[in-house]
Image 1: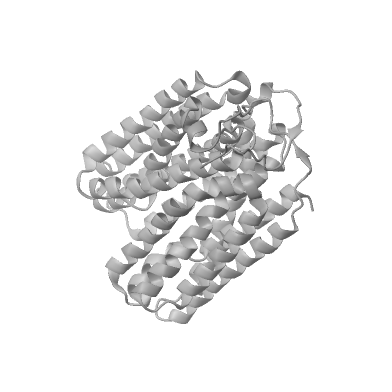
Image 2: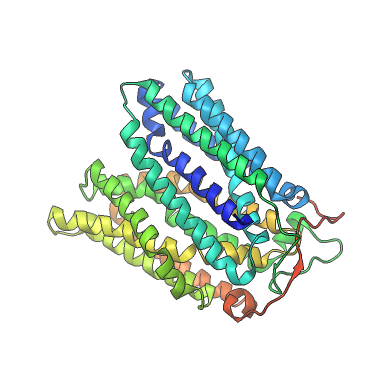
Length: 423
C-alpha cells in the first residue's frame, strides 16, 4: 500500500472512531454522567480552547520535525483523551480529558494535510484532498450510525464502549502513520513561493497578502456554514420552522449523503476551473441555502413544505462543502513557501477553530429568537463570500488559481529548516 493510500486509510478510520462519540457527547456529559448542561457546555468549550492553544505551536513543529511524528504523537494523545473521557465521572475529569482529546484531534488535521501535500503531486493534490474529505464524511456517517445502535442512555457502560472504540481508532491511525514512508522527493510546484533569507514564520505569513485574504475568507466560510450547523441553524429550525429533533438528524444525514454521493461528480466539475470562481460559486449556492431556510421558517407554506425546505438547506450546504474540499486545502498548500506548509496548514486550521468558536456564540441566540435578521444576515454573509473570493482571485498567480494549467516540476521534499524560521 502506497504512502498516500495509507494516510487516507488512517484518516478514514480516525473519522470512523470520532463518529461514534460526536453526536452523543452532550447527552453523555449532561445526562448519562449527570453532570448538568453547564458542565456539558464547558466540556464542548474545552475542545475549542485546547485547539486554540496548541495550533499556534503546531505548524513550526510540523515543518521542523516532519508531519509523521506529529501525527503519531497527536494520535496517542487523542487516544488517551478519548479513553479518559469514557471513564470520566466528575466535572474536572470530563473537562480535562476533553481538553486532551481536543488538543490531539486539532493537531492531527494540519499534520495529515501536510502529509498529503508531501505525498502527492500538484496534479493529484486536488483529488487527494477530495478523497480525504469523502472518506472522513463516510467514516463519520458510518460511525454515527453504528454508535446509535450501541448507545443506551440508561447504561453509562455503553458510552464507555463508544469512547474506547474512538481511542482504538486513534491508536490504529498512529500505527498506520508510523509505517508510512515519505518519498524522498515530492512535487510542491512552481506555485509555491520561495522563502527569502531572513523570512519565515508568523511574520512571513502575515506579510503574504493572498494567504491573509484566504484566511479571512476561510473564517467567513466556516462561520457561515459549520459554525451554524449545530447551533444557530438548528435553533432556528426548531423555533421558527417547527422541525422536530428527528428532522434535524435527517437534515444532517442529507448533508453527509450529498457529500458522499456528489464528491467525485463535483470534483470533475471544479478541478479544471479557477479556484476563486469555485469558491465564489459556493457563496451563491449557500445564499440559496439560506433562502430555503428563510422559506422554511418565515414562509406560509405547510409544515411538510417547511420541513422539505429545511432539509434542502443542509443538502445545499453539503454540495458547497463538496466543492470546497478539493479547492481550499490545496490552495493553502500552493500558497505556502517551501518549508512552511505545516505552518500554513496550522494557521488555516486555527482560523477554522476560531470561526467554530465564534459562530455558535453569534448564531445561536440569533437563530433562536431573531429569526428574520438571522436569515438576512447570513444570506448577506454568503454573498460576501462571493465578493471575497473574486477579490482573492486577483491576488493569485494563474497556476495557483487554476492548477490544471501547471506543468510538471519537482522540488525537494521534506521539512526545510531555516535558521530564521520562527512561529
